Image (cartoon, rainbow, N blue to C red):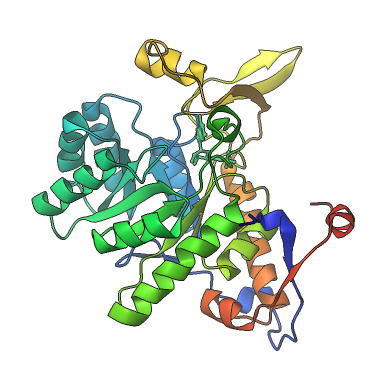
Amino acid sequence: MRGYSLDDVLLEPQFSSIRSRLDTDTSTYLTDKTKISSPIMATNMSTITELDMMEVMNQVGGVGALHRFMKPYKSVQIVADAVNKKVNPVVSSIGIGDEEYHRATQLMKYGHSIILIDVAHGHSIGVVEQLAKLKQFNPNGEYIVGNIATGRAANDFINYGASALRVGIGGGSRCLTRTVTGHGVPNLTALLEVAKIRDKHYKNTGRYVPVIIDGGIKNSGDMVKALYFGADVICIGNLLAGTEETPGEKITRDGKHFKKYYGMASKEAQDTHRGGMKAGTASEGFSELVPYKGSAKPILEELIGGIRSGLTYSGARNIIMLRQKGKPIYISDASRGESKL
Ligand code: XMP
Protein backbone atom coordinates (compact mmCIF):
# COMPACT_ATOMS: atom_id res chain seq x y z
CA MET A 1 0.00 0.00 0.00
CA ARG A 2 1.14 3.53 -0.77
CA GLY A 3 0.83 6.27 1.85
CA TYR A 4 -0.01 9.92 1.17
CA SER A 5 0.49 13.15 3.03
CA LEU A 6 -1.50 16.37 2.95
CA ASP A 7 1.31 17.83 0.81
CA ASP A 8 0.37 15.34 -1.91
CA VAL A 9 -3.00 17.00 -2.53
CA LEU A 10 -4.78 20.26 -3.20
CA LEU A 11 -8.45 21.10 -3.52
CA GLU A 12 -9.70 22.34 -6.87
CA PRO A 13 -11.49 25.71 -6.65
CA GLN A 14 -15.27 25.37 -7.11
CA PHE A 15 -17.92 27.90 -8.10
CA SER A 16 -18.76 29.96 -5.03
CA SER A 17 -21.98 31.83 -4.32
CA ILE A 18 -20.60 33.04 -0.99
CA ARG A 19 -20.01 36.79 -1.11
CA SER A 20 -17.77 37.08 1.94
CA ARG A 21 -15.58 34.65 3.79
CA LEU A 22 -17.27 35.94 6.94
CA ASP A 23 -20.45 34.19 5.75
CA THR A 24 -18.90 30.85 6.64
CA ASP A 25 -19.38 28.72 9.73
CA THR A 26 -16.31 26.94 11.13
CA SER A 27 -18.12 25.13 13.95
CA THR A 28 -17.42 21.45 14.39
CA TYR A 29 -17.72 18.50 16.73
CA LEU A 30 -14.90 17.90 19.19
CA THR A 31 -16.54 14.75 20.56
CA ASP A 32 -19.74 12.90 19.73
CA LYS A 33 -21.57 15.24 22.13
CA THR A 34 -19.62 18.49 22.22
CA LYS A 35 -19.44 21.22 19.61
CA ILE A 36 -16.85 24.01 19.39
CA SER A 37 -16.91 27.00 17.07
CA SER A 38 -13.39 26.75 15.61
CA PRO A 39 -11.83 23.44 14.58
CA ILE A 40 -8.46 23.89 16.31
CA MET A 41 -6.95 22.14 19.33
CA ALA A 42 -3.70 23.26 21.01
CA THR A 43 -1.84 20.06 21.69
CA ASN A 44 -1.24 18.61 25.15
CA MET A 45 2.52 19.09 25.24
CA SER A 46 4.26 20.62 28.24
CA THR A 47 5.76 23.33 26.06
CA ILE A 48 2.37 24.23 24.54
CA THR A 49 -0.70 23.97 26.78
CA GLU A 50 -1.39 25.03 30.33
CA LEU A 51 -3.93 27.57 31.61
CA ASP A 52 -2.93 30.56 29.45
CA MET A 53 -3.16 28.54 26.23
CA MET A 54 -6.47 26.99 27.33
CA GLU A 55 -7.85 30.50 27.79
CA VAL A 56 -6.69 31.91 24.48
CA MET A 57 -7.92 28.82 22.62
CA ASN A 58 -11.29 29.26 24.30
CA GLN A 59 -11.37 32.91 23.24
CA VAL A 60 -11.04 31.97 19.57
CA GLY A 61 -13.61 29.17 19.83
CA GLY A 62 -11.15 26.27 19.82
CA VAL A 63 -9.80 24.19 22.66
CA GLY A 64 -6.47 23.76 24.44
CA ALA A 65 -5.71 20.28 25.79
CA LEU A 66 -3.90 20.43 29.13
CA HIS A 67 -0.81 18.22 29.20
CA ARG A 68 -0.26 15.52 31.82
CA PHE A 69 3.41 16.00 32.67
CA MET A 70 2.69 17.27 36.16
CA LYS A 71 1.41 15.83 39.43
CA PRO A 72 -2.33 15.01 39.33
CA TYR A 73 -3.16 17.67 41.97
CA LYS A 74 -1.58 20.27 39.70
CA SER A 75 -3.73 19.26 36.68
CA VAL A 76 -6.79 19.36 38.91
CA GLN A 77 -5.85 22.86 40.07
CA ILE A 78 -5.40 24.10 36.49
CA VAL A 79 -8.69 22.56 35.39
CA ALA A 80 -10.48 24.16 38.35
CA ASP A 81 -8.92 27.55 37.46
CA ALA A 82 -9.89 27.11 33.80
CA VAL A 83 -13.49 26.36 34.76
CA ASN A 84 -13.56 29.45 37.00
CA LYS A 85 -12.32 31.53 34.11
CA LYS A 86 -15.25 30.15 32.09
CA VAL A 87 -13.24 28.05 29.76
CA ASN A 88 -15.68 25.61 28.19
CA PRO A 89 -15.19 22.81 27.30
CA VAL A 90 -12.05 21.86 29.21
CA VAL A 91 -9.86 19.08 27.83
CA SER A 92 -7.19 17.53 30.04
CA SER A 93 -4.91 14.58 29.44
CA ILE A 94 -4.11 11.37 31.18
CA GLY A 95 -1.96 8.34 30.39
CA ILE A 96 -2.37 4.69 31.32
CA GLY A 97 -2.27 2.90 34.68
CA ASP A 98 -3.85 3.45 38.09
CA GLU A 99 -2.38 6.81 38.97
CA GLU A 100 -3.58 8.23 35.67
CA TYR A 101 -7.01 6.69 36.21
CA HIS A 102 -7.23 8.54 39.52
CA ARG A 103 -6.12 11.74 37.85
CA ALA A 104 -9.05 11.36 35.42
CA THR A 105 -11.61 10.69 38.15
CA GLN A 106 -10.51 13.90 39.89
CA LEU A 107 -10.43 15.96 36.68
CA MET A 108 -13.95 14.93 35.73
CA LYS A 109 -15.37 16.60 38.83
CA TYR A 110 -14.92 20.01 37.23
CA GLY A 111 -17.19 21.74 34.71
CA HIS A 112 -17.41 20.34 31.24
CA SER A 113 -14.28 18.21 31.50
CA ILE A 114 -13.29 16.01 28.61
CA ILE A 115 -10.51 13.47 29.11
CA LEU A 116 -7.86 12.86 26.48
CA ILE A 117 -6.27 9.44 26.95
CA ASP A 118 -3.01 10.13 25.20
CA VAL A 119 -0.33 7.56 24.52
CA ALA A 120 2.23 7.60 21.70
CA HIS A 121 0.98 4.21 20.43
CA GLY A 122 -2.70 4.45 21.36
CA HIS A 123 -3.82 1.15 19.86
CA SER A 124 -2.50 -0.77 22.84
CA ILE A 125 -3.79 -2.75 25.79
CA GLY A 126 -3.14 -0.06 28.41
CA VAL A 127 -5.37 2.42 26.59
CA VAL A 128 -8.12 -0.14 25.98
CA GLU A 129 -8.13 -0.97 29.70
CA GLN A 130 -8.06 2.68 30.76
CA LEU A 131 -11.01 3.52 28.52
CA ALA A 132 -12.98 0.53 29.81
CA LYS A 133 -12.32 1.47 33.44
CA LEU A 134 -13.25 5.09 32.91
CA LYS A 135 -16.42 4.19 31.04
CA GLN A 136 -17.38 2.04 34.00
CA PHE A 137 -16.60 4.86 36.43
CA ASN A 138 -18.49 7.47 34.41
CA PRO A 139 -20.46 6.16 31.42
CA ASN A 140 -21.44 9.72 30.48
CA GLY A 141 -17.87 10.99 30.49
CA GLU A 142 -16.29 12.06 27.21
CA TYR A 143 -13.07 10.29 26.30
CA ILE A 144 -10.86 11.24 23.39
CA VAL A 145 -8.45 8.42 22.56
CA GLY A 146 -5.15 8.54 20.73
CA ASN A 147 -2.93 8.52 18.93
CA ILE A 148 -3.87 6.00 16.30
CA ALA A 149 -3.12 5.67 12.59
CA THR A 150 -5.18 2.77 11.22
CA GLY A 151 -8.76 1.82 10.40
CA ARG A 152 -8.44 -1.20 12.65
CA ALA A 153 -7.62 0.96 15.67
CA ALA A 154 -10.49 3.30 14.80
CA ASN A 155 -12.90 0.39 14.59
CA ASP A 156 -11.80 -0.98 17.96
CA PHE A 157 -12.03 2.34 19.80
CA ILE A 158 -15.38 3.29 18.27
CA ASN A 159 -16.69 -0.09 19.43
CA TYR A 160 -15.23 0.48 22.90
CA GLY A 161 -17.12 3.78 23.10
CA ALA A 162 -14.45 6.45 22.50
CA SER A 163 -15.99 9.93 22.10
CA ALA A 164 -13.38 11.08 19.55
CA LEU A 165 -10.20 9.73 17.98
CA ARG A 166 -6.87 11.50 17.65
CA VAL A 167 -4.97 10.43 14.56
CA GLY A 168 -1.31 10.71 13.63
CA ILE A 169 1.80 8.75 14.45
CA GLY A 170 5.26 10.09 13.76
CA GLY A 171 4.31 13.14 11.69
CA GLY A 172 4.85 15.77 14.39
CA SER A 173 7.45 18.46 13.84
CA ARG A 174 9.55 17.30 16.83
CA CYS A 175 8.91 13.54 16.32
CA LEU A 176 11.48 10.88 15.61
CA THR A 177 9.16 7.88 15.92
CA ARG A 178 9.37 6.95 12.25
CA THR A 179 13.16 7.08 12.16
CA VAL A 180 13.62 5.38 15.52
CA THR A 181 10.98 2.65 15.18
CA GLY A 182 10.28 2.36 11.45
CA HIS A 183 6.58 2.77 12.21
CA GLY A 184 4.00 5.37 11.26
CA VAL A 185 1.49 6.17 8.53
CA PRO A 186 1.63 9.30 6.36
CA ASN A 187 -0.98 11.66 7.77
CA LEU A 188 -3.42 11.81 4.84
CA THR A 189 -3.58 8.02 4.54
CA ALA A 190 -4.03 7.63 8.30
CA LEU A 191 -6.83 10.19 8.23
CA LEU A 192 -8.55 8.54 5.24
CA GLU A 193 -8.41 5.08 6.84
CA VAL A 194 -9.82 6.31 10.14
CA ALA A 195 -12.47 8.55 8.57
CA LYS A 196 -13.65 5.69 6.36
CA ILE A 197 -14.33 3.51 9.42
CA ARG A 198 -15.89 6.42 11.33
CA ASP A 199 -18.26 7.13 8.40
CA LYS A 200 -19.22 3.46 8.21
CA HIS A 201 -20.14 3.42 11.90
CA TYR A 202 -22.07 6.65 11.52
CA LYS A 203 -24.08 5.13 8.67
CA ASN A 204 -24.77 1.94 10.62
CA THR A 205 -25.40 3.35 14.10
CA GLY A 206 -26.04 7.10 13.77
CA ARG A 207 -23.18 7.83 16.19
CA TYR A 208 -20.66 10.27 14.76
CA VAL A 209 -17.22 10.01 16.30
CA PRO A 210 -15.10 13.06 15.45
CA VAL A 211 -11.54 12.69 14.22
CA ILE A 212 -8.74 14.97 15.37
CA ILE A 213 -5.77 15.07 13.01
CA ASP A 214 -2.48 15.65 14.78
CA GLY A 215 1.14 16.21 13.82
CA GLY A 216 2.88 18.10 11.06
CA ILE A 217 0.19 20.73 10.39
CA LYS A 218 2.04 23.68 8.86
CA ASN A 219 -0.63 26.18 7.80
CA SER A 220 -4.35 26.82 7.34
CA GLY A 221 -4.17 25.16 3.91
CA ASP A 222 -3.30 21.86 5.60
CA MET A 223 -6.25 22.44 7.94
CA VAL A 224 -8.72 22.97 5.10
CA LYS A 225 -7.47 19.86 3.30
CA ALA A 226 -7.72 17.79 6.49
CA LEU A 227 -11.28 19.01 7.13
CA TYR A 228 -12.22 18.04 3.58
CA PHE A 229 -10.75 14.56 4.02
CA GLY A 230 -12.74 13.88 7.19
CA ALA A 231 -10.99 15.55 10.13
CA ASP A 232 -13.26 17.49 12.48
CA VAL A 233 -10.56 19.15 14.55
CA ILE A 234 -6.93 19.99 13.79
CA CYS A 235 -4.42 19.59 16.59
CA ILE A 236 -1.36 21.85 16.48
CA GLY A 237 1.88 22.20 18.38
CA ASN A 238 4.54 23.80 16.22
CA LEU A 239 2.25 26.55 14.92
CA LEU A 240 1.83 27.75 18.52
CA ALA A 241 5.35 27.03 19.77
CA GLY A 242 7.17 30.16 20.94
CA THR A 243 4.00 32.12 21.68
CA GLU A 244 3.50 34.09 24.87
CA GLU A 245 0.79 31.70 26.15
CA THR A 246 3.00 28.61 26.04
CA PRO A 247 4.52 27.50 29.36
CA GLY A 248 8.21 28.15 29.93
CA GLU A 249 10.48 31.13 30.14
CA LYS A 250 11.59 33.36 27.31
CA ILE A 251 15.25 32.71 26.53
CA THR A 252 17.44 35.51 25.18
CA ARG A 253 20.43 34.79 22.91
CA ASP A 254 22.36 37.57 21.17
CA GLY A 255 19.48 39.96 21.84
CA LYS A 256 16.90 37.67 20.23
CA HIS A 257 14.08 35.97 22.16
CA PHE A 258 13.21 32.28 22.00
CA LYS A 259 11.12 29.65 23.77
CA LYS A 260 11.77 25.93 24.05
CA TYR A 261 9.68 23.39 22.12
CA TYR A 262 10.44 19.71 22.63
CA GLY A 263 8.80 16.40 21.75
CA MET A 264 7.22 14.65 24.74
CA ALA A 265 9.26 11.54 23.99
CA SER A 266 12.52 13.47 23.70
CA LYS A 267 15.38 13.16 26.14
CA GLU A 268 14.77 16.73 27.23
CA ALA A 269 11.14 15.91 28.16
CA GLN A 270 12.21 12.79 30.05
CA ASP A 271 14.94 14.71 31.89
CA THR A 272 12.54 17.53 32.76
CA HIS A 273 9.48 15.52 33.77
CA ARG A 274 10.57 11.98 34.53
CA GLY A 275 14.01 12.31 36.10
CA GLY A 276 15.82 11.05 32.99
CA MET A 277 15.47 8.36 30.32
CA LYS A 278 14.50 4.90 31.55
CA ALA A 279 17.19 2.27 30.94
CA GLY A 280 16.49 0.32 27.75
CA THR A 281 14.44 3.08 26.11
CA ALA A 282 15.25 5.39 23.18
CA SER A 283 14.27 8.98 22.72
CA GLU A 284 11.63 9.51 19.99
CA GLY A 285 11.62 13.26 19.81
CA PHE A 286 13.87 16.27 19.95
CA SER A 287 14.10 19.74 21.41
CA GLU A 288 14.61 23.10 19.73
CA LEU A 289 14.55 26.77 20.54
CA VAL A 290 11.91 28.54 18.47
CA PRO A 291 11.75 32.31 17.96
CA TYR A 292 9.43 34.11 20.36
CA LYS A 293 6.22 34.93 18.49
CA GLY A 294 4.21 37.17 20.86
CA SER A 295 0.57 36.35 21.58
CA ALA A 296 -1.05 33.27 20.06
CA LYS A 297 -4.29 35.13 19.40
CA PRO A 298 -3.40 36.87 16.10
CA ILE A 299 -1.80 33.64 14.86
CA LEU A 300 -4.98 31.71 15.63
CA GLU A 301 -7.16 34.40 14.07
CA GLU A 302 -5.06 34.24 10.92
CA LEU A 303 -5.42 30.44 10.79
CA ILE A 304 -9.19 30.63 11.30
CA GLY A 305 -9.39 33.34 8.63
CA GLY A 306 -7.49 31.01 6.31
CA ILE A 307 -9.97 28.21 7.01
CA ARG A 308 -12.89 30.54 6.23
CA SER A 309 -11.23 31.55 2.99
CA GLY A 310 -10.57 27.89 2.17
CA LEU A 311 -14.26 27.07 2.62
CA THR A 312 -15.23 29.75 0.10
CA TYR A 313 -12.74 28.40 -2.48
CA SER A 314 -14.77 25.18 -2.42
CA GLY A 315 -18.03 27.17 -2.46
CA ALA A 316 -18.82 25.80 1.02
CA ARG A 317 -20.53 27.63 3.87
CA ASN A 318 -19.42 25.09 6.45
CA ILE A 319 -17.36 21.94 6.96
CA ILE A 320 -20.14 19.56 5.92
CA MET A 321 -20.57 21.44 2.63
CA LEU A 322 -16.79 21.41 2.14
CA ARG A 323 -16.85 17.60 2.22
CA GLN A 324 -19.73 17.53 -0.25
CA LYS A 325 -18.45 20.13 -2.70
CA GLY A 326 -14.66 19.86 -2.45
CA LYS A 327 -12.72 18.08 -5.17
CA PRO A 328 -9.21 16.81 -4.44
CA ILE A 329 -6.40 16.67 -6.91
CA TYR A 330 -3.25 14.61 -6.34
CA ILE A 331 -0.23 16.64 -7.33
CA SER A 332 3.21 15.96 -8.79
CA ASP A 333 6.55 16.90 -7.24
CA ALA A 334 6.86 19.79 -9.68
CA SER A 335 3.44 21.16 -8.73
CA ARG A 336 4.33 20.83 -5.06
CA GLY A 337 7.25 23.18 -5.67
CA GLU A 338 5.01 25.55 -7.61
CA SER A 339 2.56 25.54 -4.69
CA LYS A 340 5.36 26.29 -2.21
CA LEU A 341 4.33 23.29 -0.11
P1 XMP B 1 3.39 19.50 15.48
O1 XMP B 1 3.88 19.14 14.12
O2 XMP B 1 2.13 20.31 15.42
O3 XMP B 1 3.02 18.10 16.16
O4 XMP B 1 4.45 20.14 16.31
C1 XMP B 1 2.53 17.98 17.48
C2 XMP B 1 2.30 16.53 17.80
O5 XMP B 1 3.53 15.78 17.83
C3 XMP B 1 3.34 14.61 18.61
N1 XMP B 1 4.49 14.46 19.52
C4 XMP B 1 5.49 13.58 19.39
N2 XMP B 1 5.65 12.57 18.51
N3 XMP B 1 7.73 12.03 19.54
C5 XMP B 1 6.79 11.78 18.60
O6 XMP B 1 6.94 10.85 17.81
C6 XMP B 1 7.63 13.01 20.47
O7 XMP B 1 8.51 13.22 21.29
C7 XMP B 1 6.44 13.82 20.38
N4 XMP B 1 5.97 14.86 21.13
C8 XMP B 1 4.80 15.22 20.58
C9 XMP B 1 2.05 14.79 19.39
O8 XMP B 1 1.06 13.97 18.81
C10 XMP B 1 1.74 16.27 19.17
O9 XMP B 1 0.37 16.58 19.26
